[in-house]
Length: 147
Image (cartoon, rainbow, N blue to C red; front, side, top):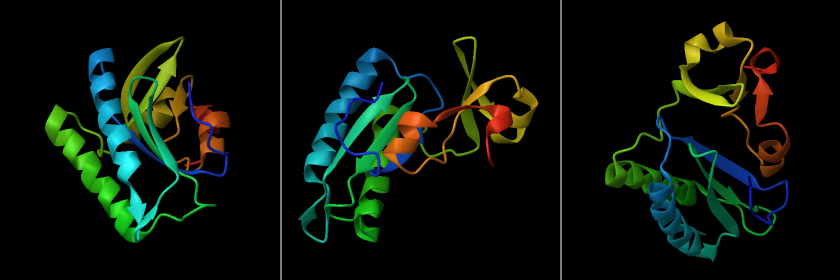
């Protein structure tokens, strides 16, 4: 569930873990996310955003760019932050060769090249760019996925 009051036009960056994040690890990472978001800025201007974990696999960073737009430097700082999470917790968040699929409530990580072989499954689309897409069109049937 996506628990944020940000508008649907909010820009998002999604980082998928290659393994399911335990409840304890999620709680720890959420504290790190809250600290990062409270200090995230673009050229000295505070970004209006949020960060949360979804479906036990995804870390989402979100910025309402109608207030202040994310800059190259602020995006770079978020990437450094994600790399630090990887290092601190021994998890992989930047490997885009795998995607999370689901069939009958069972989640499975699948190599990107093998996605089309799983046509009866749903995929969590890693290419969404807005909170609205994340809320409405994130989990789609593999056969409907436009890649």
